[in-house]
Length: 140
Image 1 (cartoon, rainbow, N blue to C red):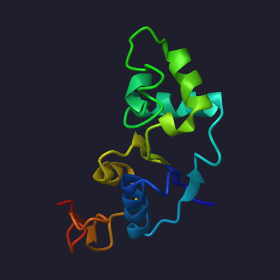
Image 2 (image 1 turned 180 degrees about the horizontal axis):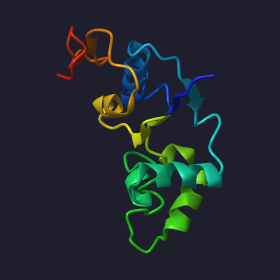
Image 3 (image 1 turned 135 degrees about the vertical axis):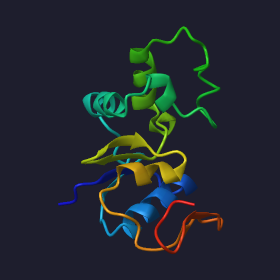
Image 4 (image 1 turned 45 degrees about the horizontal axis):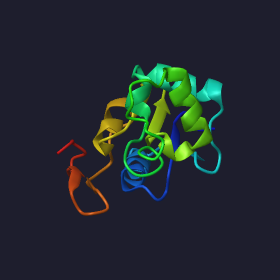
């Protein structure tokens, strides 16, 4: 069983880059495709608490249904925002990664390097070619 879990959306470039960085550290994470297997309320609340972020910071603003639901309105409570994320998992920003060193919303993708147990084993570039880690395994 892996000691790393990624809440992943394979259609998201950042999420795919984070998964690649985890693999490059020699780890095989537990991958939860959260759009297929959404978290329950307790799991989502625990993730947000472990990240030490406000609920709004975990809310994905880009694209629908954020604008359609008017979620930029400050009237929504944290509980209501979590309700929206549970009803529409696409509203959960990604990827979130849980490791023994911490839990993080790994945006930008290089943020995952701060919570990985093992260093990178070589160079890594994002899908679009931008380097993240050099040949010596150091962050660029």
